[in-house]
Image (cartoon, rainbow, N blue to C red; front, side, top):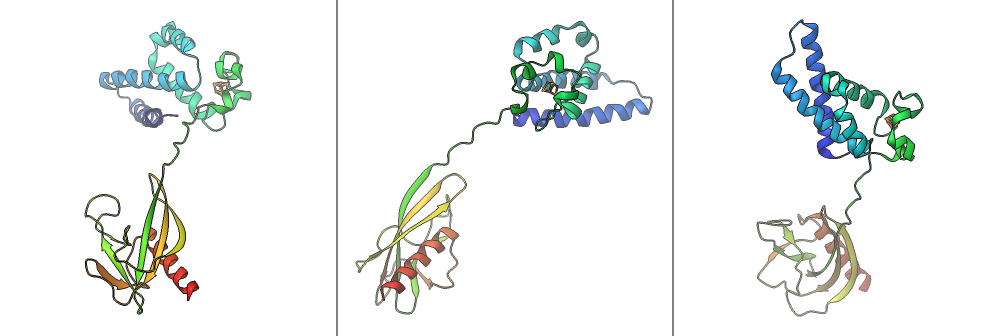
Length: 226
Ligand code: SF4
């Protein structure tokens, strides 16, 4: 079901509740509501057309004399059908009064409707991270630009901050909302960390989780090589 269709059905159920309450209180049907009801009726028909009926069948119903004469009752019948029988996850076709006319049932597609949109494949990116430590386990870091991904946060640099004995420390994987990332990590120990960045304790540095993964991979690789 589309987002709009879902919203419409929810909204329609709310409107139905409001109109019933109004009827209970003996108040007349307001023209404004009638107009909105007609509008929703069309929206709901759009949902039903996509989910249950073939377009040609829906057009026939729109021309049906009963539907034209009593759009409120017609919409009510659709609500009741959708709320009690033709539910998105488990349509009760066996006891549905519409069974003999249902195109989805005839086509054998009732259980698979409404069709779910295919999930978009998350793009994949690659990068490198250079973990530079000194003998006291301080790490050389850079601060990212204030805007954009991880804006203003500390990062392990993506280029070597100085010439050193860089060793490969494997790769780490991280999944962001819009893409997944594989970082190849290099690590080195130096006597003195260079200028041009920020220095923090490797153990306690406040890093985003992807950078923490890279830093830990670099530290592990350096420990293993000792
Ligand atoms: S027969 Fe099944 S799919 Fe068709 S309207 Fe009834 S509950 Fe929905």
